[in-house]
Image 1 (cartoon, rainbow, N blue to C red):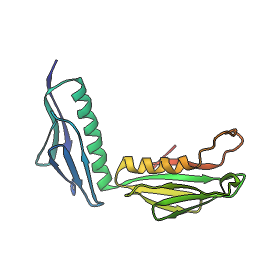
Image 2 (image 1 turned 60 degrees about the vertical axis):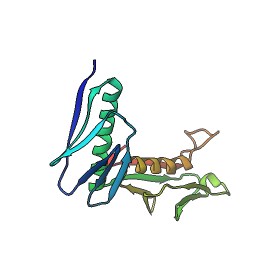
Image 3 (image 1 turned 30 degrees about the horizontal axis):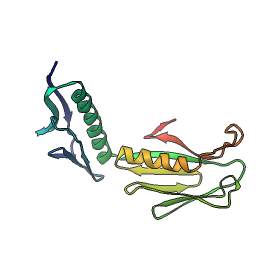
Image 4 (image 1 turned 135 degrees about the vertical axis):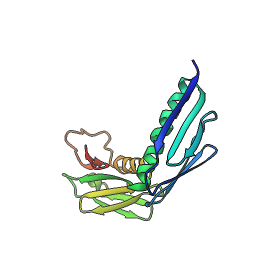
Amino acid sequence: MKRKISKEITIPEGVQIESSGSTITVKGKEGELKRKFGSKNIIFRKENSKFFIECKKATKNEKKRINTINAHVKNMIKGVQEGFEYKLKICSSHFPMTVEVKGRDISVKNFLGEKIPRVSKLPEGADIEIKGDVITVKALDKELAGQTAAAIERITKIREKDRRVFQDGIFIVEKGGVKI
């Protein structure tokens, strides 16, 4: 059964939301985020301090899309207000490893005694800071912060060795202030 479905988001002070077609732009004190949602029948509109995501004749799939877009817009609002932060811990018990950032590359040297450093490219928009054995990843976009932290964690993935014995690596320990 097709029916009208609408989601309402309250726009906080200091945040501006603009929509043109299927692109939504959110501006705040921390910066600006822009995202394109490929949905034909879903309409975005702004009234006073409210932002509406709606569809006049919504099917199940369009209802799912509306809820997904609602969650993305709320994350964008939180991102331009506060930003997102992930913390990773460098753990080395067998060999002392060195982690350094040069430009948009992160390299891990002497991981499990390897002679060749493990290197990964990092996406634009995420700030990485290393203090002692803690790596902090900050970004306005939640997905960008999470993907950057996962890319750093993936550098030190151990293959063909017993994980219970070789516990070296870089691990995510905190997401958005919540310890894992």
